[in-house]
Image (cartoon, rainbow, N blue to C red; front, side, top):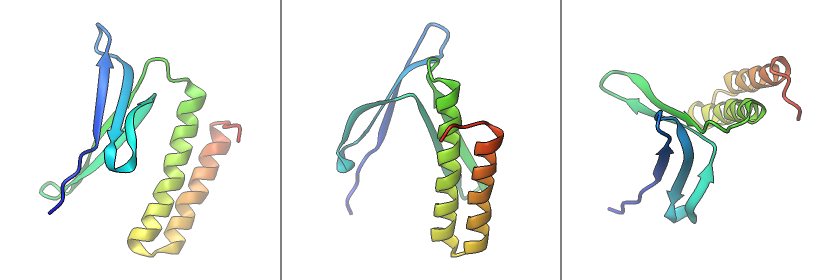
Length: 108
């Protein structure tokens, strides 16, 4: 069995607020890439719930955060379609993403 690692490093200020986030995925050619935000979800099969880590640096602009959310919503629709084959629900998620873009005034 082969094993690989994806790592995320977070540098915090004196108030424990993220100042710098870097990530590595060596199999994917990613080494010490800096990012302003990350959202990680994992499925806990015992409790039947999603567990999350949501981090962003204090200098992440709000308009970038809105774009980040929009792209996550689009990705959720695509992932849902691949995982379930339910095109109608996946399309609804993508429509919701576009409504979010309109309501949050994202400039595309």
